[in-house]
Image (tube, rainbow, N blue to C red):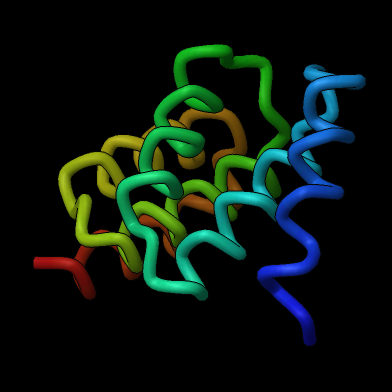
Length: 100
C-alpha cells in the first residue's frame, strides 16, 4: 500500500475527529512501518495518556510500543489489558514473557 500517501489523510482525519482512536492507531502503525519510531511512540503514548481505550486499542498500542522498542511501555499496557479483561491474562502474560 501507499503508506506515505495515507499519512496526510489520516492526520487530517485525526484533526477533524481527535476521539477516533482507530485513526490514531493506524497513523502510528504507518509511521512505524515507514521507520519513524519516534512519531509512532508519540502517538502511542498520547493514546495511553488519553485513556478510555478498548481492549483491542490497548492491544494495538502494546504491540506498537514493543515494535518501536519501548518494551517497558508495552509491558505496562499488557498489564492494563489483563486488568481490563481477565480472560486476556494468559495472553498478556505470554506477551510480557516474550519481551523479557
